[in-house]
Image (cartoon, rainbow, N blue to C red; front, side, top):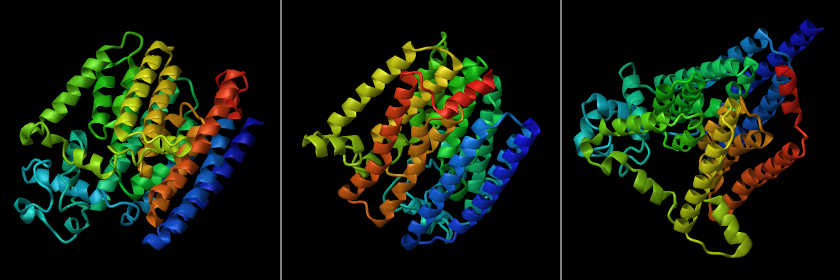
Length: 446
């Protein structure tokens, strides 16, 4: 009976994978602001297929053929859009530029791209497409800069930079498979990351630097499970030096007397910034202060929770007050995590809570900031996180308008249903009513 079920699973995944490939190719035909609605339609259809595929692999018995199909299509999906020019973002042109600047022996934090000192590095392919080139220093942290430099020593092309991000994705998928095996979980659950349309479009399509951070996060948790304090601390610091948000995951690792991780994390983080400190202590953070002002973080404009409080209760709280409250909430969550259970499953679950809280509290303006949540779905599948990561595609509707009222509607569609689903899930667990996916996981482990 089992071989028959394996065949059904394989056929279903092959059909869904084939349809998804066609949709990825179709999505490439979108262009300009006028094409964003079509792209979002494609992305949501792909997301429906992805959800069905995830449900199938959770219910299916462990099978090597399922793992191979999941990995094969994960590669095909990415290759199908790798060679297309970026449509959804132009950030990747700054990556190539930063690598070029470093190759010329210049600290990438020293000059803006339009500075006369860099005139000899300009070309007609990369430079004209760099956003904020006339006023903003680079914002990307040291380990991202190291990757930019190494990549551009092979080729100063957008395709090769995207290929580098896909290499980090392969590392992520490999690390997920290894950790699932160590936890006694079916490796086919890696499909929940490998097939997620969000990470495919943002990394194979746009080449976002978040792929580097997620790759290091995946290695950090794998090494944590293997009892390597040095490796876990070093890798998590590398993740934070690619994109600063992984720093919130540190408390999840400081269990079972694993406090040395904090030392190795801090030492790596400091050394990473020391390598670029020739520009000065403040300049080494690049355009981060200016970016904070540009995005309205001081006024609180982008924070959905603050906007909701203002709408519901008429309280005109400042962005500073909200930031202080956010620090208190994250501090309380960190303390809660430190005092909770120390099983590997608990560590990943608590890390997911910290990552989700960070994302929700800061309510990013861009969908790729949700990609790191996808990693945790492979170990702690939650319907609320499935919804949150998929609904983040709605942020591309800001191409059609991003006034405060329009942003409030978009964010309401992202966060309020996710909150409702999360409350229902919490109730399920509180009263012993497990969702079907979790029941099936228990059956597989028995």
